[in-house]
Image 1 (cartoon, rainbow, N blue to C red):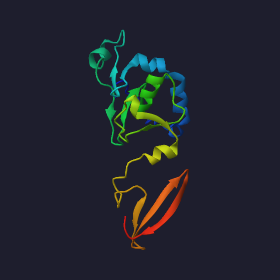
Image 2 (tube, rainbow, N blue to C red):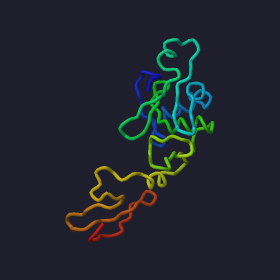
Image 3 (cartoon, rainbow, N blue to C red):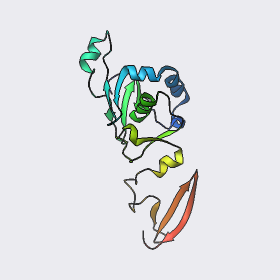
Image 4 (cartoon, helix red, strand yellow):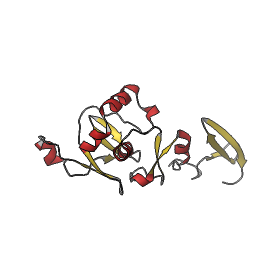
Amino acid sequence: GGAGSATHVAVRADLRNTSGDVLLMLRDHLSPEIVRELLDYDSDNGTFLWRVRPGNAHFNATYAGKRAGCFVSDGYQMITIMGIRIRSHLLAWIHYYGEWPCMDIDHADGNGWNNAIGNLRLADESQNMANARVRDDSSSGLKGVTFAPKMRRWRARIGVGRKRLHLGYFESK
C-alpha cells in the first residue's frame, strides 16, 4: 500500500466483479499516464517503485524509490492509488501497454505474485479458471476431483463455460 488512506475497495482484474461506480471512476481518472507518473514498473521482474512527487516532501521521504504494494492473503499483490486497492497485475498491464485490459488478466505460471509482463496474458473467465491452482481444501489434491462419501468413489467434474459437467464416479483418483 502506502499511497492512500481512504476506504479500500478490492479492484480485481476481472472487471465484471468490480462495482460499476468504482470501475467508472478508475477508468475515468486513472489513465496510463497517471499510473506512469505515480509508479515505475520493471516489466522483467514485475516490481513497482513509487516515483518522486514534486512538492510532496512527506511522501517522498516515506515512499519515493521504495517498493510499492503489499501481498495479501488471496495470493495477489495490491497497490493503493487514490484510496483504492488495485491488484498489481492490472496496473502492470496499464503501465506497460498504455491501456486498460479488455479481458481478465491471467498469470501464466499460476503465481499471483509474479507480475512480470511476460507472465501476464489476457484470458476470458473460463481460461483464467482453467489455470487456477488446486484449492487448499481439496480432498483429492486434484482440480475437479472430490470424494463422494455416499458413493464411496471419487467424482470427476469439469467446468465448461458457465456449466459444470459430471464425468463420472471412479474407484481411484
